[in-house]
Image (cartoon, helix red, strand yellow):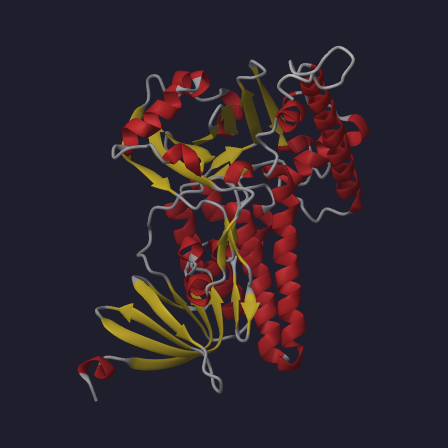
Length: 438
């Protein structure tokens, strides 16, 4: 036996969860609570830094079910709504979650992810999951006959576990999607982000201080997220091409983007950058396959969409609930496995799709105009607010009005195209294309 083979130990569990973020910790807590033997391996030690600090109102019932809402509430900043700022309209517009069609969830929280994720991770352990920190999974083997075998580095040696089922909740590491070769960039939203944290940024006043602000600018959009400790998270999301000429100095690149937006430059005029500026590419992606024989992908390990509506943590936790339900069913009733995994995949894809239609169009003039000139005809504005609060399954009353919104969008876009067409200098008065230059 080689020295490496001697260093490999073995253990067994019902479910092995790769990653202890919102998706993995949520699923682990629910499965352990149901009596399954659950192991969670997180590559980091908690607390650890993570971006994505804004929750949605519909996160709150999920936190209630996990029994951790009070812990989050003590450290989070209340978020009552969203502010959109458009230099193309010369104004800002604020939306209040309390005015949504479903008024049960009028607020949410802005959180430090280091604290938030640790609460969820420790909760999974308290529910009975066996958790390992600084434990990096390097391989998952799926023998033709037998249980999956997970190999990870822990305390300087290799460890192996045999599990009846594997949940990959490894976030943007996408362990299984990368290993299986099913990860793809999202061709409709190929973007990248650069971000940092500032103190003494100028915020909204009073009850609106906790609003997340979205600021459009020529190269993309900014997020502006106030945190309860006085720090403000600021990031710019732009098409990948914008980053090609960024140079070696990421801070200078970030500050140049800020300077190109009068609104952001004003809000950060007296602010001080805390720590380093960070950039991440390949911002939007998806796994062509999210389930398989004895495994499924949850949260960002399955897909990541543009964060303009702060959907990341909500979709991750929601998929954690659905993953726990699916895996418990697969273990209890193996004959139903194919059906249960298909249902899981359909649910997660449907949830993401509810937001992506808006996300794919958020930079288009027609969509900006609708957000900057709100009208509540047929209570459409209230339905859009319900969606932005996370109410993607709020029933036909919301869904019907969202379809009306889409119709309004397409009519608005058509009017924009007609206007541009009429202003085309290559057109003559009669509307036929001129011979020269056609």
